[in-house]
Length: 581
Image (cartoon, rainbow, N blue to C red; front, top):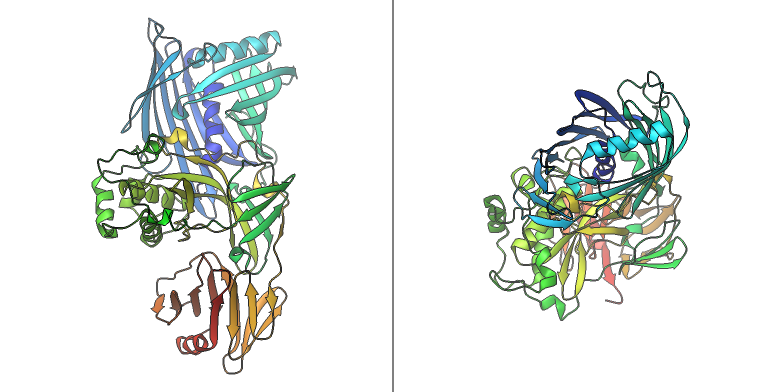
């Protein structure tokens, strides 16, 4: 999961707000997230140019993700402004440029390397030249007056608004003239509480912002680090850990209490303040399941064009993507849904190295180096679907995963494909088509550029600060069978046992067998496919001593502590049936 981009936009905003006097002397800053050092920034400012290098370093469960922004802005003698930038979210940088002309003051011309150029409208109060913001800040500190700044963040094509009120003189170390201001920093629908220290002679020297309870600090290198550096890893701030609920990910409906107000959606229904019912996504109906992809050179609906377009993040016509299309070997008569299911499974199996050490790679990077987490699965799947004529987009939000001890809700990315008039969620990270029940979409993106990557979490508390209550309808258990919503698990020999919230099969010859249900396909390298009449997919792993049975609708039944021989014996006495299908 690409958690760092949820906050990197906030840190990159600091590049516009933390400047020094008009001299080519470099100023150095440090970033801290949750009390832990998380990168640095170097700023050089003069009358004719500004140069910023902003680096973010995030640790995630032993892996380190590094992301970098390099931005150069110049102003010529006629007042024209030229901005060039490079943003590296993974190994390959995304580059762009923008130009503003005094003769056309309400237009900003932007082009992204590998993408199409565009012009956007700019209000007259938006500051495109960072020294203007610096001047306004130093004046506010000198006169102890309120400050309102509207600035533009070039790499993300975003307008940010800073509103500050002077509070009191508050010297920090060598910065004896510092004035403390309090207020808000807004970008789109995201608003953060912010405290700034500004010197009349030095400009801004420190900024402390709070997003959903997560404290983010950018300050001059000369200022001592925060006294409390005992915070947890940034990764942990993005997680909500919940008590284990057996077979939670199998459920067709999950009730969640304690969430903030969220955008409306098909798979979530608000029933009370902070309380939602999450529903399992249905596959396309009979009519829509027959819909064919948009063929090459065919004219798509105007509303679908942006979800079929190429972009620097995708590269759908590159030879690397062409090679993967050949490996997919799609039937010429395949429907959109057929293509979705095949691409979903292909991406899951293609990316074998499912690590956390990749920031946000492009589809081409993933095609050439198949590693990464949910964002890499998502961009590659979107690229393949678009190349094959299926409108597709990325969705960002929260998703729950389960293991034997706890439920974890965390930031996640997945795919939505348009079939009929519906957007069907797919999750190639877990090989789910449609995606599982326990997910909360917050935003979606056409992936046209980095500017369109928005997790939608700015005004929402970080997950580690949320107290959630999860409830589901009770499952029924008897000695020889369990009913979980529409699925029945029956034993011809042996009996079911529930102890301390965990389930076992007690078999007279095989002994105790640990049983769990998951929405994830866990596929060790030595997994062996076993063909069993009446079952879709059965796999056995000798190294994990585990039998995995696909029960449909992203429901995997895991039985542990088995040899291959005992697994075959168990399959003869375990019967799976369905109701309301």
